[in-house]
Amino acid sequence: MKLSHVPAAVVFDMDGLLFDTEALYQEAFTRAASDRGYDMPFPVLLAMVGHPWPVNRVQLLDHYGPAFPVDEFGEAVRQHFISLADTRLRLKPGVFELLNVLDELRLPRAIATSSKHDTVQRHLAAHALHGRFHAVVAHGDYAASKPAPDPYLNAAKRLGVDPQSCLALEDSYAGVRSASSAGMTTIMVPDLLQPTGEIKRLCAHVATDLHEVRGLISDASLRRVA
Image 1 (tube, one colour):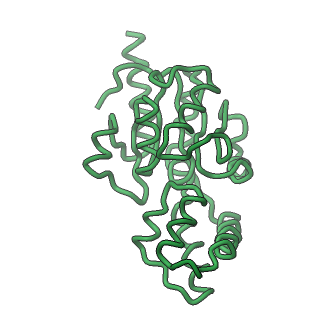
Image 2 (tube, helix red, strand yellow):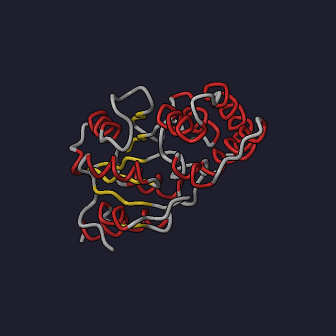
């Protein structure tokens, strides 16, 4: 696969794309459930990937029933996750290398995530990534969360770039649907979820990792120069 042109900007998802956090979230959910005597089936965990807490809250109540102490459970998940991330937060392969290429090409970039701003800032600080993104669009910055296009449209607006000129990088179904409906060229870099037929149709490409994405952008840049 080749990019037809160098994007005017790149918009990144965060969890599962920049940071290897989805497995930590799954462990946090499983621990919180076990602490309270509940099983946490894997399909329920997968259904929550890429969604903000209000959406996952509804899914949990649908699964466990209205008597489930969902808000207490959510706080327990948050505390477990913070504890896990303090010692086990890892970058996904290729993050620094891709950001370095974007610096060389002077391409603006943003984060569009379902996480809260304090979580984003904590993660960026843990890996000295402050200043590597020109905008952060997080929970609370848009009317409708992924899979609605709002997060990606907001990111493009903050960067001052037409959404159709942006490249979006995602790992979740909700994120791919969001970026695609915003009109962005979308590349999926799978983490826990493998692309379905529908998701493949919404993507320009499914990449192995961010190293591959870096290569695609670098190749497009070389062809532009030539």
